[in-house]
Image 1 (cartoon, rainbow, N blue to C red):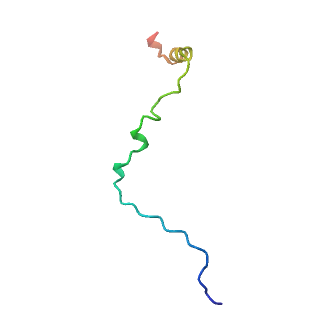
Image 2: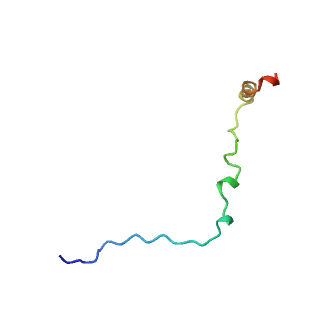
Image 3: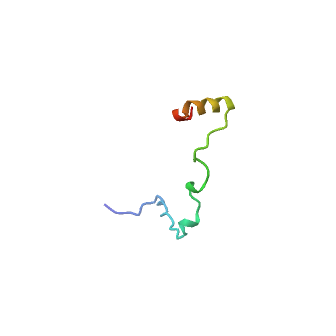
Amino acid sequence: MSTAPDPRPRDPKPALFFDDPLDQQSSDDTDRGWGERPSGDSAADLKRFLDEKPPHHI
């Protein structure tokens, strides 16, 4: 059998980046995901407050 070169193109190797990773903003550096809730009506907020209030705050 002859070993002919594969005519299909090969996937290029991933490029190496030597950038400083600390120069890039991470998801922890943003305010997204830190407990904010979608805005709702004030009645639902009051109900949640009263439901989650500790017993010593009655």
